[in-house]
Picture (cartoon, rainbow, N blue to C red):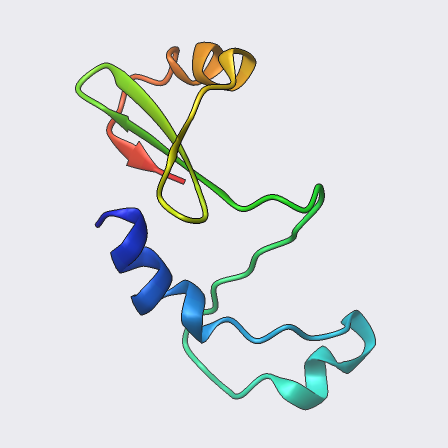
Length: 80
């Protein structure tokens, strides 16, 4: 799944909810996706076949060496 597919299929379904209102707003489900926005930026990190890519919310590749360097130690294919 690329960043555009993620945004249209997953992130578009996110519902912002204040902590104290979670029990009133969330519908019953077998599982939930959650996201905490700490710094004001949305990013997707992809590690695949030893290559590390970091994308912003528009799908543009970002170069933040401290993140990509740390992620290069991940030995499995993953998108987070």
